Length: 203
Length: 261
Image 1 (tube, chains in turn green, yellow):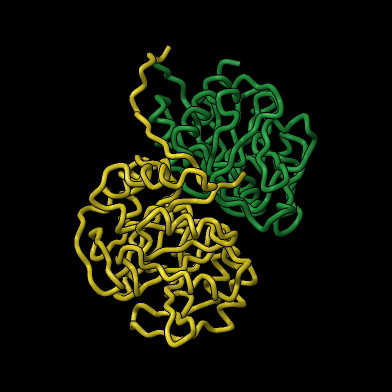
Image 2 (cartoon, rainbow over the protein chains, first blue to last red; image 1 turned 120 degrees about the horizontal axis):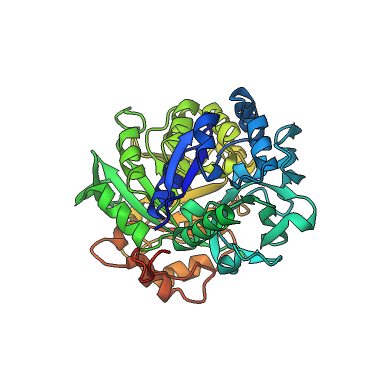
């Protein structure tokens, strides 16, 4: 049984209920907080999020979490961004207006080119060898977004197609972002969350 | 490849899940939580809970229900419909656990709030519900609160065309609850053919569903009544729809046969 603790970074965007349930179901302890002292006592940080990029960055700034997350990444602390949380890991976003991001993974967030939005279940294909994601290669996950990551291919671990390819998982060291919602992706999501969290914590 | 979706619908009236027939007659089914839990276990692609009395009685959204559903630890995307009056209602619903919202009465009452919701939450979070019927050679749009039908206004078509919402839930309300009765005509002549549609009402067989899923503008099929009194109803429909661009049926157990190390 794993007794790792996962810290959900609470910056007031979106709901955490499903993420909390999924993590507890997998046997992890969960702390939800915007206090760095609480987040410091966890093994892996999760940055969730639903909504628009500029207001999310504003919320992180207001809570003094931008510098904190950058510092944690420099110290090789595992960080997992989910959906909007993944986009926040990038250098900047063009959603609504140009906004600087956390800049933990070089690249920008741009509007999807082939469609206005991407809603539903889509397959994830690994384009880089990554042991933590091997079991998820070819699995389907739930997406709900209209912007996506665009950056160097070296950080793009998995792609999905709609119909052209876009990055669905990005990684730079111990910082990982997933564009889909693993917590809403049933069995496939559980497997991915478990492998990513345990793998990143033990790396 | 992006899959099309099979959406499980739970209709709720006065706090109870009901079978609904033509937006007029209702039979109680039980606690909404039980039906939602089944759909989650059966691997529905999305779950839509629609509370049909909230706008009629001006009750606003049922946040308590959403909290109870959140407590179930659902692993399926949840769509909420019922009683949304404002942008703040919508934001609170998303914060309470809904992944997407359906607006219906708001389309009749306050289009600026629909636009506001879209700006705040993103169009991908918004679905427009349009109960339609084919009458006298044209499509009529029902305002279910007063049971009055009128032609679809240009204002609504413009709103949909401008991508303020991401999908339209078209309900054949007259045939809702009647097996094999969905009238394809309302889809064929819906004037915005490039808008993704979710179809609902009278869809009881895989043959009907297959016919709709072959159309490029249909993104999802929604089923409510015809999932009741069966076990694994979602998986069975998916098995019958093998070859369609749907996610495969999935049976799963939460109990691992491998010990954690």
